[in-house]
Length: 354
Image (cartoon, rainbow, N blue to C red; front, side, top):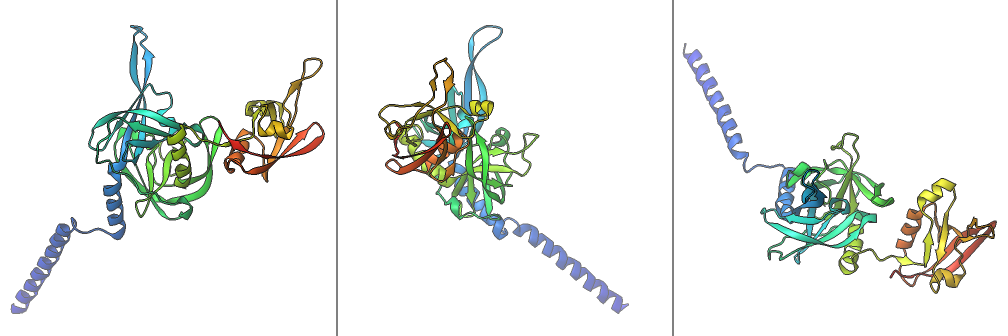
């Protein structure tokens, strides 16, 4: 009998110990976090005040009253670039807008104006009017340091649900995606961090909370996240945004030619890009390049067809513009072209676009 009591008492104490342990564990959850959880929550806490909601409204005439009304056109995400009130977002978020509104994390709303646009990089810079004094900015990272498998975090406003955090890894580097205007954005980051409509223009951060990309697109037949999202690398952003702030557009070196459209190239199956017009007094004209002209019977005769810029093969306008963007005003470059059955090389010095 005494042995039975001792056994029961021991079992009771054991159960009490387990229960106490469970209660203790539950109580400690508020102060407990894994290293990864702690890293994510710290980054979100510091970075989310810099993330904004961008609303795009357009004008449309009412079918019934014929009155012109403002209607929502779209919404997306952006982030504070500096404390003067500059906001970076995607071009496609604000394209076609009549009015732009930026909402900060504290729900305060500000009218915004467009400062610069770069459709070929899907980037835009806005400025909010009378910004508050306590704007939070994001530290800039280096996207060249990214490797596949590294942790990344995305903050945005998917489906209008503001300030949402998703995490994932870098799935691939060096991807290409289409940009507005039939250009292609090269060197893009692929991530499996959930990116949905509304995340566009939001920041992609590394595990130090540094900006490493701008979320821009998803690959999904359904239009929702399927584990394949894309971000413009921050090194591209650091090159483009200062130009948009200073000039309102990207300044790329030029040689002074007008090229045939890509649709025309596809229609006539031409290898290379024909020069339609050469502007007098500019490098291409001084080097002796020739544009298209009309023959004696009114037919169009092609002049020079550019096939290579330096060591870069030119198949379309995007190839040509990408090759030019690698140059600086004053650089010398060899333009290789086909004129009839002849192959010609023009050595010239590029100048800054006007």
